[in-house]
Image 1 (cartoon, protein in one colour):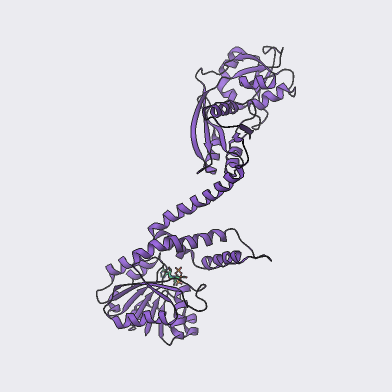
Image 2 (cartoon, rainbow, N blue to C red; image 1 turned 60 degrees about the vertical axis):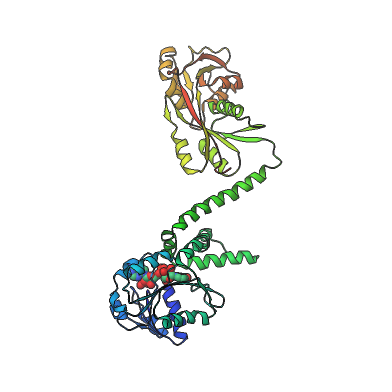
Length: 446
Ligand code: NAP
């Protein structure tokens, strides 16, 4: 047979070598001039694809990338292919089948194929490797049989199947294989002196899939509608596997671990206590993780079962660090819990707030209480320690005698109880209806 190959890349060259070895004549064309490679293997390279189409090939194989396929075929002088068997080898099938039927002249036969192997997996023998095909439009049975016969003689397992059915199977086999190989490739896995057979297979998978062009992988994704579904399923599957590990680690632990944004005695703490009661969480063990980022990271790592953090206050607005952290870690919101906030001015026992000089608290609390402080306690200026010190942490510092004598704090009622402080003024917030929205969440899929 005289075989023309359009798209003389990785795969086109691989096929050409086998055809030449079996004594067939090969003519080829590709965008990049691969003249030397062609010459070395004994094929004829055409610089103008029109000349190749005019060369009287019995079979013309379309072996360009999936993404360039339509553009390349439309640019061919298709009338010159009159009487030839046009074969595509694209790794997706319904798309070229529909396209070739539409654009090829009626005098061309069409065979859609997918050799389910490549230069790496088919480097040695093709014995037992699957060759899928659909005879889309065949009049010259002799040429078609001769072409298919070549693969059968090489030992391929010949599989006649519709292109549509191929794509459904390929999304769950080929696309999943390529995605897994590329994903493992990102791990930069190395040979070890104690490789298992399974590990060696993984290393081979990485090599086989990452040696293929990204165009090929992208083609598998974008021209097979089922691939998107498989990608989503892969993500879910990893999450499920992770969750099953975390669930297993919980066996034998009777406590429910709740990670919260604030410290002990914070409003987050108060919100967590309300949520624990509402959802009747058994044996709650509250972990004071201070920031919403730490809460979400701990949830994602399986270190806690539930998370609580503030996202908005009616007076001071959005809690931006929480919003940014939410965009970083997957989680599932169980409830956005609104809780009225009653800010209190807390002093050490016996301390007079009217003679104190400074309030130390979190900036969010100052934003909520500025007017009332100016009116009721004009003697007080405010200061804050750092973002790590929420209202409860400031109260704890005051209770422990770690702040100067002329200092008071703004914090919750439960902080007063916790750190042995006196409530000098209850309801310091300017807005009577001051409330904060807290996210109560769990791991996604848990
Ligand atoms: P690929 O990246 O899918 O395709 C590379 C080929 O496409 C090269 O010949 C390249 O030409 C050509 N090409 C890309 N963009 C082009 C453009 N704009 N105009 C003209 N030609 C263009 O890699 P491949 O592995 O060689 O695969 C070729 C075909 O075989 C694909 O359809 C693939 O799905 C199918 N296939 C591959 C394997 C495999 O294991 N690799 C197995 C079965 C089927 P230049 O080199 O001149 O840029």
